[in-house]
Image 1 (cartoon, rainbow, N blue to C red):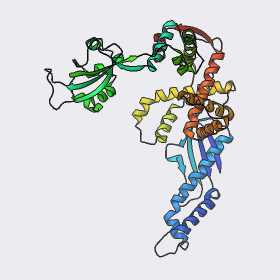
Image 2: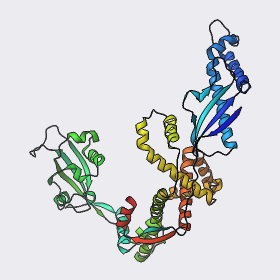
Image 3: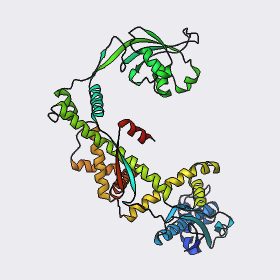
Image 4: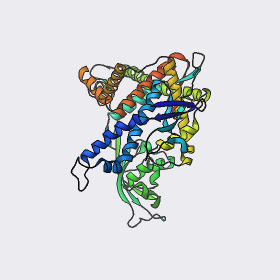
Length: 451
């Protein structure tokens, strides 16, 4: 077996795999013997079928399978041995010369494959690079809002006489005609709405102050959050929304008000455990600290986005575009049209470019993901999951076993490795570039994160 490399240009090459008869003949013979032992052909006992019949029936397919295996082994062996960095996988060369040889009179074969070469990437990142590091200004207003949310979460629903700005309304919805009369055979459904999420000012004003038994004409979309929520509220499917009236009569059956929990030792203990917090001032300090920690991950993500945009724009990366488009088409499980590849290729190329940039950063700075570190990181994720559900983490031995079980699943292992890689990348960014810390209000931070 012989593999010849022919460079087309800096990003493309052809690998020609030359296969001699002795490279595959014994393997084909062994495979045909297996078929002979198990083949069921009328008139012959198993194992006694003439080899000529086996050859005629299975010869070409066995030859093709055997050649495919020996060629692949040789191809990837050559790539690994010569440390050739490729994008995607080798694909058969286009044209009549991609395969040379006669399957009906097999002797020597030659298979030609195209490969896309990984381009050289140089990432310039140092303390000379300056980026905004956006942080939330944790002020008294934000702390008090968080405390109110906690008090509401641990509070209780009580009946109320009038509809307030944050009350829950249990109501019956009846579909109306354009003239305001009840539509016979129309929608009739009971559901709940939250005044807190009614954004339309006119609708909110119309409902505020209403009492049990009052009837209000409303538009369903203005007391719900999106089509899925509207459909659920009316007891129909999303597909039916386009065919219903926009006018509904809403009869208020019950009004519930959230009575917030008192700022007491009982609440402090429920939130943080017995005796950890013993006063309102201590609670505010603790909430402020927790909020600062909570927003770090979001601040890190925003920083990564800034650096991503900058490096994508400034780092020169040339790709073997023609090869990659053909590889995408051939490797896709379902048929894909050339127009679709063209439409989506820029996004794919950008993603690949970022992977190459990341790879260069990891390689140039000797950043590695070792197995023990991956296990410890996974254990940390599991501990966080237990804490989220208010459960204590198991002993270290059991926790390690659970982490190993997670990592034994390929998809989960890839997900965890990606998370650890992202963490190492942001640590590198924060220790390498110059950060311009910038405090903004919570609302401004949300807008920046969204954009």
